[in-house]
Length: 144
Image 1 (cartoon, rainbow, N blue to C red):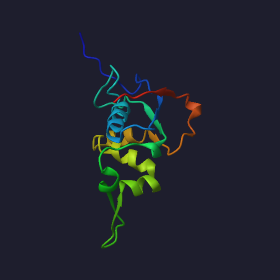
Image 2 (cartoon, rainbow, N blue to C red):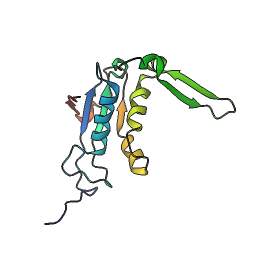
Image 3 (cartoon, rainbow, N blue to C red):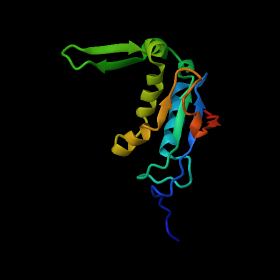
Image 4 (cartoon, rainbow, N blue to C red):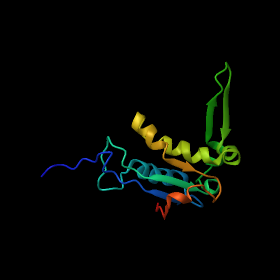
């Protein structure tokens, strides 16, 4: 019996909607990363992008445990000397809640061309509205 290997022509991509309201950030991000990579499908092949498109809504209503709202810090650099900027998770959720989920998922993806291509299939929105109704996405309940 031969081992099944998925090819780009045989993959079946779907669109999935995930509601992030009252979900724990890390647990949600791991399941989104697995869905983007296609690890929840029986035809998963590590070197082929077999994952689904994921649309995350209500990113601003994400939950975290402990004191992470005040202690977790996001860093970025402007590119100029002394240009290191930092924001707490609470400030980041106020300003750009989409980036919180995107960066959490990005940290769980492989650091390769394939990982970056899979991350482009992630669409995150702060509210409950999204422009992807034409793709007929199905709503998925992710369990922790």
